[in-house]
Image 1 (cartoon, one colour):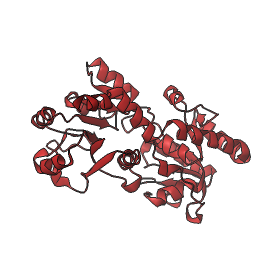
Image 2 (cartoon, one colour):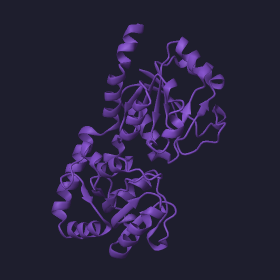
Image 3 (spheres, rainbow, N blue to C red):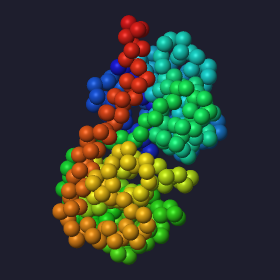
Image 4 (tube, rainbow, N blue to C red):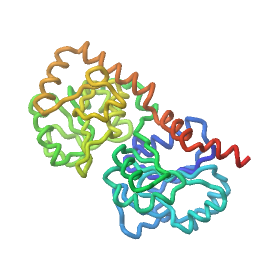
Length: 328
């Protein structure tokens, strides 16, 4: 397919949207890149929405000629609250160009995105809870589209002395995360990568690009925080990024993770900070068991949870190829 992909890469080369764009290309699609972060003149944000909230309108009038020269089979508005105006949706529909909207910050952004997501030909959400809420509101174009990972995360990197640690967290600091982080730095050789951590000796700052990989591959164990900014417990992209590296991954127990990984077989669950501390000590003392679980998690992630497989499944569900064959 020829796919026009609209998005921005807030976290640089390791950004989720960037990973999805690269996976579409690797799958053999011809993908036209529209980096909206580098071209703010292409969008209009009348309500000053942030953090995946919308609507943030793509200015079709400014890009129409280049877009139509590409002759896309499909347009993807990838996260960021990006969408088109009703007038522009109608213009695209008349020319037989479907639009897939992808939301990556649900359920936090559901209150704003649900107001306009009906206008997409198809709308994909990362959250099972949000998916059910869209369906309850009568949205017939919505699909559940969980996070995935691209192949770059599986490529082995050597341990780097500057990033070496027993335990690492690759996430920004938040007040709800401070108590657990405090116990980690007190008990283990811990590094906290991200902004806003109040532990200067253990916080080298955020990591992006190749430094992200150095940090992850130089840790023995990685901690995943499943709670969102608004307090929902959710399957977030970090669980896939972490397991792809083959490190031992810890996350809180919650039922939805069972759709993707088996506790104590492919990842390790914990029920409280004290439970986590005890389990980290155990697996540091039993490295063979730790490696067995970590390897199983990596293998499961490779078999089932890449963006390539996610897109293949979604494209089958929305029957995009059937639609294209009818156009021919």
